Length: 383
Ligand code: HEM
Image (cartoon, rainbow, N blue to C red; front, side, top):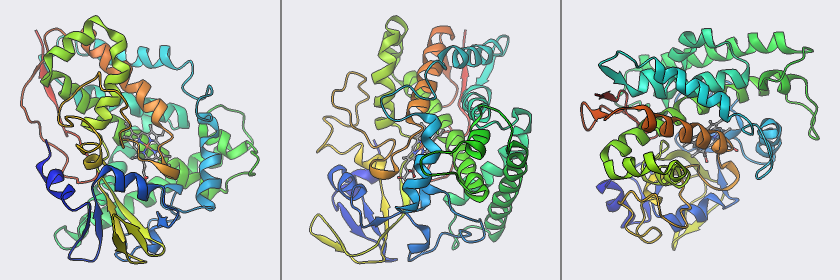
């Protein structure tokens, strides 16, 4: 039940020793996420992100309006505007086929690692296909992506400098690799995102090559690690709630509210560590001075008892489930429809096809990150 978050919520806006602020309650989090004086620009931070400068042009997740809005609009065009058919429409049969193939490969294995054998290869295959990145190159950029994600939790006081150097080098390698792919896409026909970003003119014109590389970088990383964790956290949560698992077997439509509840109860993104105050911001009677760094504890907000009844209960029938799993405000995740569909299909197929699955170790080992939460491995056995 995350006792640390319960403790944090006693002080909704807490000043840390290093001068940064931690926000942990639902009302204050949603309020500040919609505040135009909250900046995502890493260049505004009082405590700079290690390696941020060396890692090249930031992608729009780390940029403020108006540039953020222009790049986001261009990047999300293929995804479709909210509530109208977009990228995910019609993807269900292909996604189901990928998932079925992975589960077929479980046959004859005594022990399955849900992460390596299932939750990782599935969304990675999908995002590579969408972007137009050859799947066979995956082993190369798997290492780069891991080194970049490790940087999210880099602490210069305790971590070896090697970790920082590895992350910076990995960012450069990944950018160079994506830049190489992009070069081949100019003036060529094709439906993949890289080709479309390179060639389609929108109302805002086109992105520069540098912007396309930053965007592809963001989509590749966002499409990699988060969905993996949602599928893994979902498998773990179902195995810990056998009655819900049994219900899902009989009622496959339950998967839609169930995945929403997962995004609230065991979200892949626990916090956003790098926001800054453009000017003084008042939250819950506390003035956060201009220039301060602000950490947003999204997972704590989604467990706030002032907003969610009995928040530590996993309840797929929960009504009015406006969790913070995809953030909120102008940076709200636009991969949500894709991530939801992938997770719905993955969990439904697993539950349908696994025969009396059992966890080998509970709790499983976790990635040591305060930002992204999910097991490194999740071993299960079945009859
Ligand atoms: C932003 C979560 C999957 C693309 C975000 C944010 C969160 C989030 C919390 C807000 C970050 C902020 O406010 O600074 C998740 C989770 C996912 C997921 C939990 C899976 C379960 C995806 C996928 C894609 C994607 C599959 C792309 C294909 C993005 C992009 C942004 C974003 C581009 C930045 C939006 C902006 O800055 O305007 N995501 N995400 N995400 N996500 Fe996701």
